[in-house]
Amino acid sequence: MKSFLITGANRGLGLGMVKYLTKNNKARIIFATCRKPSEELTKLSQEHKNLHILNLDVTNFTKIGEIASEVSKVVGSQGLNVLINNAGVTTKFTKLQLVKAEQLLENLTVNTIAPIMLTKSLHPILKQAVEANSDKMIGAQRAVVINMSSILGSIALNDQGGFYPYRCSKAALNAATKSMSIDLKKDQIVVAALHPGWVKTDMGGKNAPLDVDTSVSGIFNTIEKLKEADSGKFLQYDGTELAW
Image 1: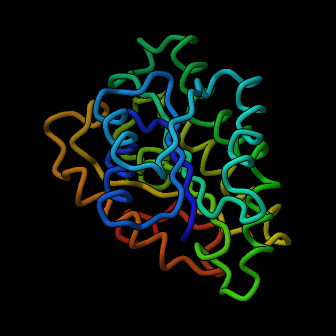
Image 2: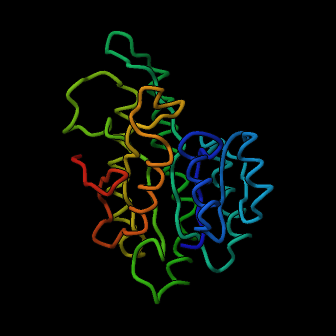
């Protein structure tokens, strides 16, 4: 895997991914997108010249359309190997009587619509990576799109209710992932939805049983092993397949 683009990279899981890639020398080029870079991300970019911070609010769809040209200038004909749609928002445990329309709309915009539009924008550059690595097996050595989902988006595994904005947006993202896997099959681009586990982050909270390093390590091990047959699957960070 030569080049990565990770959204929502200023903190939490996204920052953990950037730290993993830089620490383990796993990428030739890393794009980290965020609305405003944290001190830690800025410091990492100063220490690692292959790390490029791109200013992006994923709800700004005009800016999303411009990202492709910024990425293309850096990667050239080698294209983009791995797109990780990680940026996301959540609400508290929202019961039916308390849920607000604006919460539903915000979650859907950030968690579902943005990944679709960014993948659309970067599709030509992902195709370039496939062509540039035609001698390699279909998977992360060519081009992969990872949509960071959640087990809370699983309809089959929902036994608690609530979480309407987050659950609905992640279930919709799972549906989009499946459609992407079908639409991009002819381009030999693998697409998968990934549940990172319940992780100790600002979003996951302090009670989460999983630390960022464990989750991130598992995520990248799973990405590296992805094959053509895995396209369209809903996987846990450790590679276990989950029910839709």
